[in-house]
Image (cartoon, rainbow, N blue to C red; front, side):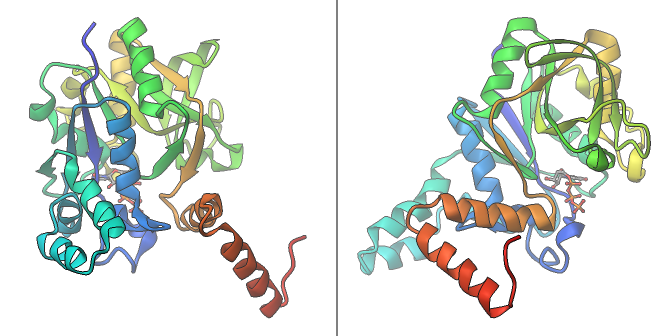
Length: 293
Ligand code: UTP
């Protein structure tokens, strides 16, 4: 069985849910506390032992490349001021070797993944979306790669969501279950009614290279976009695709409410900030005559 060595991070979407913030700033650069969301994703891949990362970028996404590059003037400035702790924080992202490819127009997630086909070649690969941050003892994508290495089947990361939110996700129609692993009858993208379950596809995938045969067809799906889920369903018919209910806490940072709540929660997890944030929240509640029910 080939090892999962490469990862694709699609980051070429328009980020319309965050407008106007994302008019000139990539959604993937919005910070959770003091780190851009995409850095959490890259760090997960590196921690999981992924050797090569490719980020799919698009128009207006230069800030992502700059973030993972050396910031020479800034580093010199911090050295002169002897701010060595900050210097280390600035240098950290530039230590990771990242490749880039441009998606010339945002035709959908499936199309973004297809753009990386030449980089991937004929081996299994990971896809990580910046919309979901997962905190886990063993990185989420590593848990899934280990499942792939047992069976040779593609593995899709899933989490339970409330039924009222299933219309926002790709949803699985499960056939059978062995512990955290599900064999899947069907993958359905954003069901408008009668979802087959409330097990939703979260932004982590291990895919076999045969996925490109289906993405190549560039079929248009839900929302007028080339959907990855549709190609996964075709791949499932060809060679079986499993879904894996990974261990860990998932933060939904792809929409405004989840983003705000994640910032609060992660700030509260930070020992240096916790007490001041709590005090700040109490003050805000008091000043606005609000109380926690
Ligand atoms: P989303 O649908 O969550 O991102 O796609 P979006 O389109 O940027 O956001 P909204 O819906 O308009 O607010 C999931 C991931 O896929 C990437 C996005 O950058 C995001 O990380 N994506 C999406 C692409 O790279 N290309 C696309 O054509 C679409």
